[in-house]
Amino acid sequence: MFTWGVSTSAYQIEGAANEGGRAPSIWDTFSRIPGAVANADNGDVACDHYHRYEEDLDLMKWLGVDAYHFSIAWPRVIPTAKGALNKTGLDFYDRLIDGALERGITPWPTLYHWDLPQAAQDKGGWNNRDCAYWFAEYAHAMGEKFGDRVKNWVTINEPFCSAWLGHLYGVMAPGIKDLQIGINASHHLLLGHGLAVDALRQVSSDFKVGVTLNFTPAIALGDSAEDLLAIQYADGFDNRWFADPVFKASYPKDIVEAFGKEVPIHPGDMEIISRPVDFLGLNYYFRQTVQYDAQAKPLPYKVINPPGVERTGMGWEVHAETFTKLLKYMHKEYGIKEFFITENGSAWDDKVVDGKVDDPNRVSYLERHLDAMFQAKAEGVPISGYFAWSLIDNFEWAYGYEKRFGLIHVDYQTQKRTPKSSAYYYRERIKNS
Ligand code: IFM
Image (cartoon, rainbow, N blue to C red; front, side, top):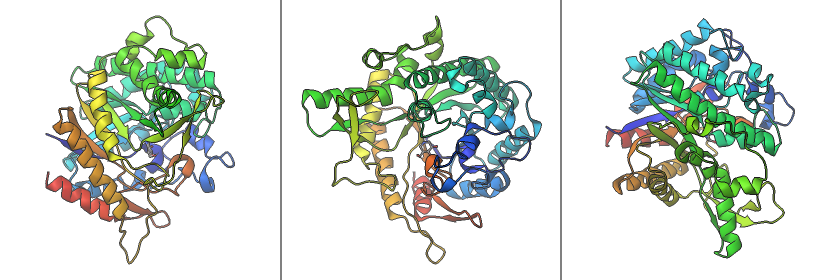
């Protein structure tokens, strides 16, 4: 059976930041830094999903999805990052999981979607190797607590964003700008993933465990030797740096050399990182155009935005054919046994008019990307499910609430949910599948 689903993440929707014993995460801290987040927005209230989860589950049932991919907030369930579990926090996920199951919706949690407990950051965060072990302990505890009802687990979501955007470019929490720390963080995130795979498997051999990686294929305007180099570096930085360790047990040599830094690998790390997973959660949003630039750091290329290209409200190029190609490539190159598309979607400048939200651009994006995915499936790529990003509009990280990715509109003043045309489209598409 093909799994139809929707995705969200804890910090982006839950709110209730100071309730039920939840401790601050690095995003609570980061969003307080002047200028870090558009309009000084934060996740204190977000979509108030913590209190409105029943209404949101009803919306999922109305959509007809089979599964709900959400994330567990580590600082809500283990406020000190390591050690004592917080019963009130666990109770929330109990209610959410039970509520989903009562509606015939399979819960699909991710364990880490960027909201590291601040307590862990105070001890160095992902720059500290110990963080990988704290994460594995947390994974084990979640497996034990929810494993009677949860069978599908995603360890880490998009380590690219945590590592590079959070520790190299500093545009996401924790806001560090240092290549060596970025490399350390990427390695410890991946190590945490591998240790969490082991930890979950220790709890139950029935669990289906995977990791979510985001992929951004690159093209150049020409095919000179420099263009090809720019593509190679972009692919190495965005894609291979994360996929190679997990599926080939090594970091890409060309990128290690070009960085000119040490990756803090201890004996045995690469075996742990490359523990066989049951599936790859693949996130695809856009492709990028790159140009060679000898001066650029940390690698000699830059992203350019040629005119005449269809772009979403994020400025991301809409290119569904790349999705088909990417899936076929990942299958062939890495021999992945099973794929779930854990995120795919687009942001647009949606408006409520007469109580309705008409979003033809999102409908078109969704339709073309679903077609592209099914094309890859028809050509032999083992794709078992698709989760649309996102169920509802939410806190889009450094963009605050300005960018809307939801199939369902959220009025942040009243918390009113209004299904957009894309929600009706998705519902029909699921019904007719
Ligand atoms: O909102 C994010 C999500 O948290 C991770 N993947 C990309 C989405 C859109 O930017």
